[in-house]
Length: 165
Image (spheres, one colour):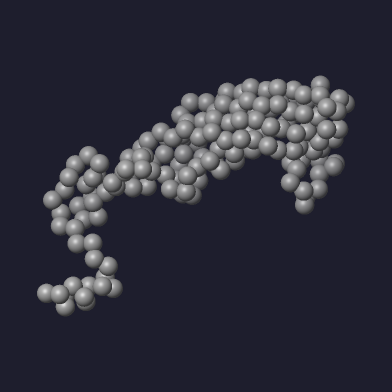
């Protein structure tokens, strides 16, 4: 996702709009492989501020993930926002939040991927009602009902149950 900014180089205040649709490689986040289903879509604009270039836009993608409860694959739509400031490497300061670049093109792909990763939920589940797997037999409780006995007793309180009997 390279954007040529030659037109903006010596024109402070000028804007350039962009629109990308690109297939991206699969990524691993938190030990889980996320597969992109279809292209990642990015729209936005770049505003020249002299030596700095402000990039603002919206990102969208569909990923194929595995549910943390039932271990079934499911599709998840992610929509994020992009707000970054790029500066030439000679003006780059390590302590600033700006991103350095050289030449006449900006590579926004790493920032697009980061904006999508930030939109991932803490726990990937196929639906809020997902019942997960049976802890004894491993059956998917969304599909079938198992006949296992479920005594969900906190082991620290097991002594109280013995007193009750």
